[in-house]
Amino acid sequence: MVEFKLVISNPEDGTSKTAVVKNELAHAFIGLKIGDSIDGTPFGYPNKKLVITGGSDKSGIPMRPDIQGGGKKYVLLAGPPGYHPKRKGERRKKLVRGNTITEDIVQINLVIKEEKNEREQTARV
Image (cartoon, rainbow, N blue to C red; front, side):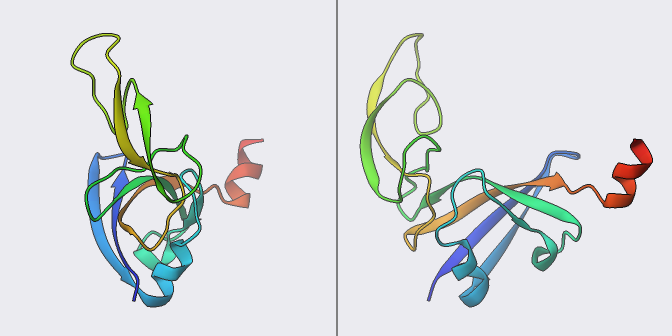
């Protein structure tokens, strides 16, 4: 049984909401990558798209958009996500996860993007 905790952020008012998805809804997330978008209707956001911005596994290891796959790797980092240097130019080798959602992921971060209706697009032209 796959279960994900979704953290859905709204950039318009700066709030975020959490939701837990299980079973069929959770299986829909497996295989998606950072930057992919899904429909927000099942989560209470009709006519809006939710864009995946990141996530972490049960140990708190963050996902990085520039690492391919769903496994863990040690990489040399100079900035976030996964490492915040104390001094300018500092780099460290850190353990991070790839950009693909697998069963090992526990938390998925999403951001709300407006979906433009066809009527609104024709009215602006």
